[in-house]
Length: 322
Image (cartoon, helix red, strand yellow):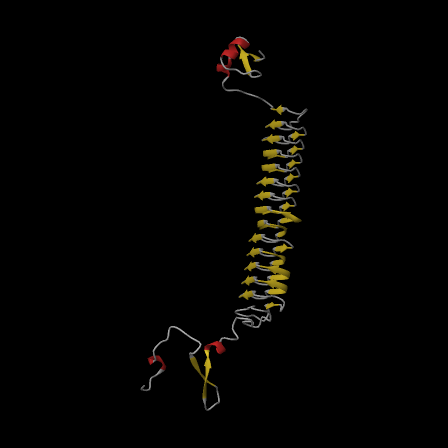
């Protein structure tokens, strides 16, 4: 074959272990050859890719301030600066960011971007962005953005600012778009608002400010400074309410107090229940009074008024009892 320059050589698109590369050592007068398998033997496999010390670990775009402990396996730090894996962390990755870290032991977990975020001990956890967020001693939990959020309850989720989900073995709670929220019960949820607290299971708070749910299966929605301590109870709208009765509710108004079971307060200001199975209404008005005028129970019954239902007899309010 006539002499050719390198650009003139035919291009090979496949490779086998029989392929050879030419090696020219600086300062040597002879050339040598190397097999592809020999050339690649130090990349991947059972050896570190770039100064990571552990098995199958990698620190691409390596910075002297980023490091992976030798006890970790099949993990990586990609980009960023000051990111570390301290302890034993398997099949985990840090991508970008600054001063993020894994400590103690983690498996199948991810840190992406942000600053000073930490995952400590657990499986299948992730923090994406934000600042000073922490997940510790749990599994299957995530923090997305925000800052100073903390999860120590498995299968939980936070997006917001300075929120806490805690409870150790307890599971499955979430805080979305809230500030200074705190959940320590199973299956709790805070959506929006700030300074909310849930301490019992299956509780929820939606919007508002400084609400406290301590009753199981209870909810506060669109309220300020309102508390639910009864089981399976509800406060919807208004401010400064207290509901301590079980399976009870306060809807609207301000500063209402429901301390009885199976009772409801509808609107008003500073209304209070007096007994169980009670509905408290400050003022009751019907717009269909003209169609409810009957002369006695017989006429009311014939018109479809049910036992116990109100009607009037030329302006005199009556209750059908027969």
